[in-house]
Amino acid sequence: MKSLRFAGNSRIEVIEARMPEPKEGQMLIRVRVSAICGSEMGGFRSEKGMEGNGGHEYAGEVVDPNGCGGFSDGDRVGVHIIIGCGECKHCLADHAVFCEKKWFCGGAHSEYHAVPAHQCVKLPDDIDWPTGVLIAGDAMGVAYHLADRIGIRGHDAVAVFGCGPIGLGNILLLDFYGARPIGIDVAPARLKLAENLGAVATINPKQDDPIARLRELTAGEGPDVCYECAGRPETVAMAFEACKCAGKIGIVGEQPEASFNPSRDLIHKELTVYGAWYWRLSEFFEMARLVREGLDVKRLISHELPLEQAQTGYDLMASGESGKVILRQW
Ligand SMILES: [Zn+2]
Ligand SMILES: [Zn+2]
Image 1: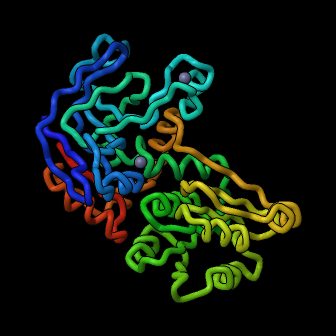
Image 2: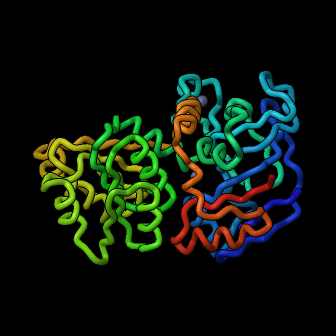
């Protein structure tokens, strides 16, 4: 089967790979669409590259249910990146992210992929492939789960620090919820995308002081909510400083260390800080409902390419100027 290999130093090879053999409890999926995720950029850029590829956002057709109940040949499914054991209390409560035996799906930029049935969700007929990969993948999943954790209300002014695909997904959803997202990024192309997806204003920290601009845009108070989607210590610091008193902070940008001042930021300002990791499989159904109510998630996609042109897709992602890039096999 055809597959991608991260060949090192930002090179992608289209290779002929061995067909995956599903183990007990796993199904064989014919991949129809996979999305490139920002989290793959480390592996893509690394000198050594890797054996396969970092693909983990995908949707496809079941070609061999392998005895897994509830699925048949031809079922269209979306796949959750986190594969839990399926048996512990966290897995049974749909929190596979907390499972001690969890592993992460990888290598999904391929013609076929094997995955446990309990991490698959059937795509309804009215959910097409691009929509399916966005709402069964991190692009919308992270945004949905974060907004749900925080309890976003219509008219909340929300500063979104970092307008990569995750920040953009948040902006799209916040706009749909009636909130007022403000996009902050140093890349003009991404600020343009943020505006197109519903940001009421954008700020480029290379040109303007984000804290002062955010105050201006919120009648001097600061945003009700600040999202940190850039994964940088300085944007975490800005989020704490900018947020209004008794406001909320949502952190989804991965990074090892950032600092805040407990007295100044938490005690005296009474801020509440939320983390959110991925999303829950059951949230797929709520996202599908939002799509039916008019949430046009496909606006997040800036480029759609055949799998064979993956190099172009990764180069676009690496340029920092794209929205979501998807690789098509349908
Ligand atoms: Zn991802
Ligand atoms: Zn488990």
